[in-house]
Amino acid sequence: MKPDWDKLMAEYEGSSTILVADVDCTTGGKELCDSVGVRGYPSIKAGSPDDLQDYTGGRDFNSLKEHAEALGPSCGPANIDLCDDWKKKQIEVFTAFGADEREAIIKKKEAEREKLEADFKAFVEGLNKAYEEASAKKDEAEEAIKNSGLGLLKAVHKFAATATTSRSEL
Image (cartoon, one colour):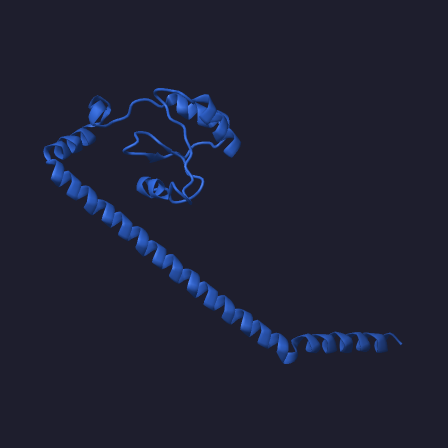
């Protein structure tokens, strides 16, 4: 996908209406990636910079270019005419809040999202630890079975079966 993405970035370089860019979420771009909800790599986001949505279409150049060409203004306070009734009502309610109230709500919601992410990471770490412990226990049990003489038992069994077959052929 990277070569096609690079080609798409070159195609839209200097565009005044469409930005195609990439961000390294493992280094300096981590904070940006966290703020827009990147959960896996590679991720493609599209739409308003303040409300990016996951892109789930094709990952080849033609699919990406087709999507980019279809982009345009999206619903938001600057383009309320593009919003459905529900989003228009939300914008009206949010606009009625004062700046301090909006800021407080944003901080609260971001803290909720960060807690969800931290809880999820802790859960996954717990699963990984449980997996590692179970895997080590299984490996130890398999080693104990092997050391109990299983291989030698199989060799004796096979040898005895071969010896019985050889004697019956005489």
